[in-house]
Image (cartoon, rainbow, N blue to C red):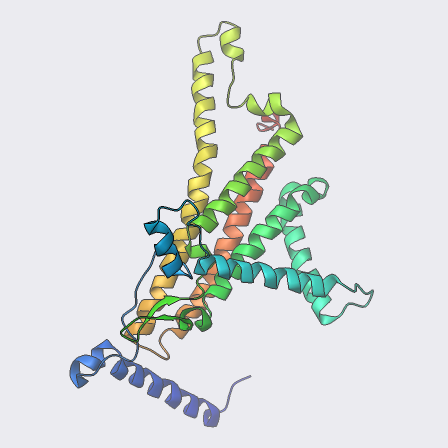
Length: 306
């Protein structure tokens, strides 16, 4: 269905007007008008910002060991968890044969994720790995999607000059502690799945293979070297998981800040759509790699050739 010209023309004029206004009120227009840009220069903070900086400063000065404080990414992560728990609780609190719209949406999400898991590991073992895969996917996805809301960058603390110096909320995926925590849980759980499926002796045998040396084979040293490389690859998964998510989410946040500063109002809208796609892809990659590693860990080493 095509929109009539009478509708497209006013919309196009509004978009063009917003673009021109964004150029004029941005840094480029400020060089000609001599006025300050509409938005202040963006400040990129890689570490998470504490919500009570004065308290943290006092504790640091007193060399107190209890200098733990709530950060803006931590608060954003709590909000994401609360929203997810509230949504699925409300959708499943009163299950019906004829589902409501909320229950239908929850069932659709669960069925899509369950089919994704079953296609890789089969229906028998899918129940084992599904809770972790679904949790990782939804947590990473909604942290990313909630983090691009304008509300996250609009509410904060003002400095002495009247500019926004810190935000109350920030995408939790841009705090390296969040991806690191999820990566540690994913990698440790995958190792547990492998030990549970194969047995501790059979699973650890791929890392510490002494069979060749015990039988007097010279190539037994090669088996030990390969096992060491395999163990190192499992440890490197923590770094790859962490920095992939942290790097992509932080780059997206910086991109939105810069584009919104250079040309406010309209130019940043396509980039918000791009960040929605990137958030979905990062959640899918994180959950998909965890699932793939889980399938490999639960497959007997002798059965890999078949």
